[in-house]
Image 1 (tube, chains in turn blue, brown):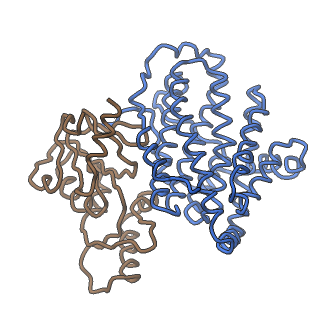
Image 2: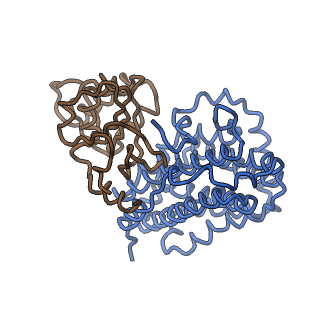
Image 3: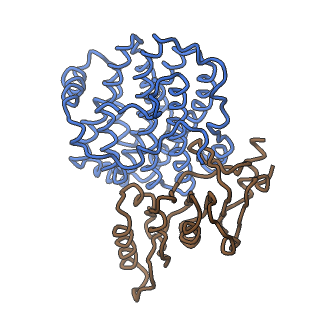
Length: 309
Length: 164
């Protein structure tokens, strides 16, 4: 049975919410102790940046969507990921984690490299590649990080915000995998040709150098905060669990590549960590940020203000 | 609540042509084709203009003796490249369909780069008392909203009832 993307689009429109719907001055901010604030500040900054970069990913997907309804859905998802970044920045402000200017802290080098890659190759990546990569990152980073946050923080406003965000994310994951089903159901030769075009050296190298250390860096940050990394692995496993439910997703070569990467990520004993991912985290930490140049203007679009005049 | 609950002025069709926008905060919600007619006029006098572009189009500043097709599109892309320096703004203005339409409009790119003007591509989902809300979660407060003829006001109204 084919999935009804038009009905999903209507649901997305009906479920829109705004930062202005939230009472940012409601009681509960005092539950953020000094100790928790210091621990959560870098974590929140990472989370905001991951959402912000996710938004950029959907902007690229919108340019290559297979149908007009999916294109419009991706345009909403682009905006919704930005909304999540904005809402999380507003939480940071509520908790006194921002300086007086209210600007978001600089991203770490791995996030900066992801931004550079999306700016350079994002719009020219083949649909099968990007459409498979986005749900992996959504499962692994978004899903895991949000779970940590809700376990650690008791502020009711935070839980209200994340009820909205989780509801949006559930639709993102649903659509992500339904699009994989749609692509996977297409002619095999088209899939193979598109997949072969994924194999351009700069694309493969870009993906390895950028996204392999990005996930491990995030894992290191999680461990540094004293949180159990198993939760990250459970989130990564979702990629495989949901993907394997599909009838056609397994026909997509990029899905198999990323699924096996996900399998390596969750196995700490795998040589992937010792020989590739961990050394890449170390090597990339020496990359001077100025080498990457100025990111495109979308990085400045983030705001914690619910209202703009 | 209907869009008329908006406390400012809601202009539809060609109503914007007869309006004085001096000192006003204005939002324009329209396709690129229409926005490119409205924005240069509004940006001349408004204190700020937020342009919510629904679908981008390729623009040429004047009628050229060039047949429609790839050559015309290439010239329009060159026009965009020469008129807009900022790569992200250029991307927002670039249509990504295989054969985008080319329309003749003058002054849109220049107006968008004025300091009082800003382009957004976020979907607008509701018109509220003091402005409009777009899907990136921000309420944009304005004095006047100009809606392009191809914008479905009913969908904004329906959404507003849902919120209320």
